Length: 343
Image (cartoon, rainbow, N blue to C red; front, side, top):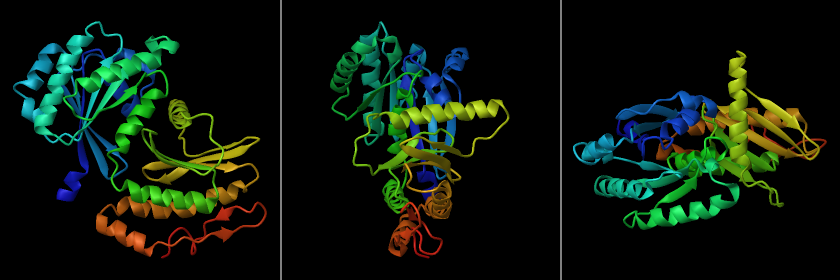
C-alpha cells in the first residue's frame, strides 16, 4: 500500500485569477483545443483531479483558484493543508499582468509556505500568454521575468518556461514538468536506447498515450536536426489529429509517413504509450519496422508493470541485446527469441 501511495504525486497549480491555469490544464489533460477554452469559467477555490499518467503514476492535481480571497485563505487557514506533501508547484504568471509586483508578493508568500511544508518540492514558473508579446521581444522579456522570479524565490531552485496555449510551448513545458515525476525513468530510457540501436532507427520518441506529452527520446543521427522543437510540434499536431478523428467517430491507432529522406511510424507501444520511429530512407521495409515495434511491445509492457526496484534490477540482470540481420536494406531486426531481452 505504501508503494502504491508513493506513486500518487501532489501537484499544485497556482497563479493569479485569469492567468490561464485552467485553460492549459484542460488542453493538456482534457483534450480541449485552444479556442474551446474561452468558455471556461474562473476556478472556485480548489479543483481536485486525479490524472492517470503512464499507468502507475497518478498526478493529484490541485488547480487553485487565484482570486485574492482564495489566495489569502491558502496562505492562512489552509496553509498546512494546501502546501504539505507537495511534489511539484507550478506557478503561472500572465505576462501582460499590470500588477506584476503584487503578483510577486503573493508568489513569494507561496514559496515561503512551500519551503516550510514541502522543502524538497520542485518549482516551475510558467510565463504564460507569450503569444501576446511581439516575437522579437519575447526572449528578452522572458529572461527579465525569469531573473526577477529567481531573485524572489527565497534561494530555492526554480525552472522557468515561456508558454502559450496557441503553440507547442505548452507541451514543452508540461513534458518537462512531468518528466521529473516519472518513476524508473533511467531503466525506461536504457531500453529505449537498446530498441533504437537494434532497429537501426535515426530517432525514437516515446509519448504518453492520452496527453501525447514527450516522455523520452533517442537521437542517433550524427547530423544535428535544424528543428529543436520538433518533439513538441509533433505532440501538438498528432493530438489535434486524434481529436479530429474522434469527431468523425474514428480511433487513431497508427500512422505511417514516407518522405524522400526518411520514413516515420507512429504506433501503440504499451497501453500507456505511443512510439514514433524515424528510419532513414531505404533502410527497411515497413513490415520490418512494424515487426520490431510489435516484438518490443511486450518487453516495454513488462517494464511498465514491473515498477519496483527489485523487479527492475532483475530485469536488468536478465537482459541481453542481440541484433538480427535482415536481407535487403541491412537494417537491424528484433527477433522473438533473440530480441531486446533474453527470456
